[in-house]
Length: 530
Picture 1 (cartoon, rainbow, N blue to C red):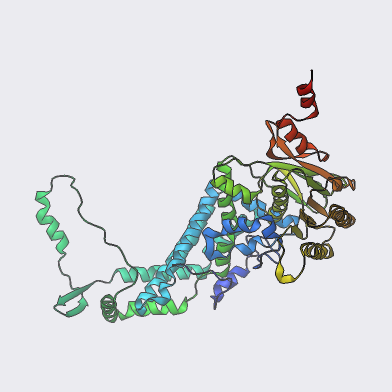
Picture 2 (picture 1 turned 120 degrees about the vertical axis):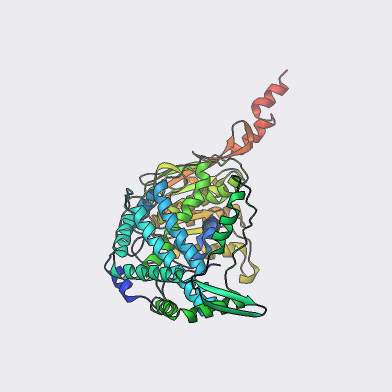
């Protein structure tokens, strides 16, 4: 049983809060607004990022992690802050220390519901005490594990400083000392239960003999070395039945001082978790979730790197990159993942992608958007290093969609409305990903609208990718880089899913098919030669 984490407590321990305020550190994700946004960005579905984020967060549902992936960062330093933490957690000893901490807290949270839902009051108080113990062990063990580690990230260094100060704080020490004393007091209680027919009586244990010792002593002469153990382990069920609860109530009446102290402890420390500890436990799973997600890719030989991100230059460079949403499916099917790269230098701002259908153009467009978004989160991206990206303010996407009868607009009208909305909101610092729009109109109209769209993006000086069937759009401006979906050199009619930076000629696919079936001009001349 698990309970959702919350950002705030219904009440808090003031002493622990004052201790947290003494530490400037407040978040392992970096300081700043909009770290968590509940609503998914509009571009996520087009770019396949919804599938990626879903795969990341599913194992950690109780932490509500998706919102962390919805909020892109706009500060270079904030991105570097996260990259530093990611690099630290890529070290096995550091990850082991952090996982040990989070797993102990996870067990503690599984027990907390029993502290409120158990039938018997004394049982509820004991589960609460057990949860406090788990919490204290998690903090102390984390402090011990982090102490000798070489941490290079500001985030984990500050977290270690906070944990050290928290462990040494008077409120935490008092909490742990009280809990330990109660455990000792409860363990020292002995009692006897007498069952006679339907009657059960409970009394203090008065130096009665230990029959287990006597039986072992009696049968010791029959021992013949190691023997098979025929005992069975009975399942331990959580929660007392009504008879056990009545026995416990009787024991509490026989030991009012100890059980009174247990009730007083519960009342004083009903909410015992330091809010910052709870917050970091949640936020650290942003890193754990992402590193766990990309681990199978790395084991399969796929590269991930920490890119440099800058808003001072629009030069972009990446190689060996791939679409994570598609890559996830191919990885599960044990199929090869094709990688691509791209560059923008100087005045270049737009990549116009052409080539045959089913050649990897849409996958390239999704990959372009995914890489920029993931880089803006501080995540390792699927590419070989070094990689370089522009730090955008907003990322827009416009992919071809089926006609929606609910809006009473035709497909072309809907394309124009959506594109108009993007152009109204985009700035010189935006990234725009466009995939095969205006396909529902005539060639001349599509060419006119395509040129008008790219011209406005060019005047904005925004970075853009446009997948199109119109080769003419690759030549409309010096800002445009042409990339063409290549064919398999071993089979001219097959797709290689590789994209090449070269001029679009519109003939490559037709010539490849003609070559495959030996109907090119050269082949025909050879066949009709006398």
